[in-house]
Structures are given as C-alpha cells and as structure tokens.
Amino acid sequence: MKKLVLAAALTAAASTAFAGNMSAPAMEPEVIVEETSSSSAGIIVPVLFLLLVAAVASN
Image (cartoon, rainbow, N blue to C red; front, side, top):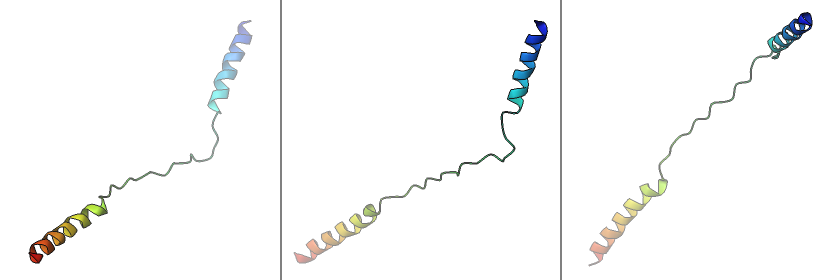
C-alpha cells in the first residue's frame, strides 16, 4: 500500500514538472494610451474673439 501511495505521489509530482512546453512564451503587445486634447477648444476661442472684434467694429 505504501508503494502505491509513493508511486502516485511521484507520478503527480512528475506530471506537473512537464506541464509546459519548450516554445517561448508569447508576449502581449504593450498598449500605449496617448491623451489628446480636444481640437474644438483650440478653434472656439479664436472664433469667439473674431466675432467680438467684428461686433465692436460694426458699431
């Protein structure tokens, strides 16, 4: 009985040692998130300024 338990323990230990394969692990590509500012904010302020200048010039 002891030999059977020992054989089962050695079999379980040996099977986990060969669980992987020899190929190189596949690395996931690193995701880079680039924060961009809103392009409409760069347009709205000059357009409002031009409208203000046009309103002042028309008076």
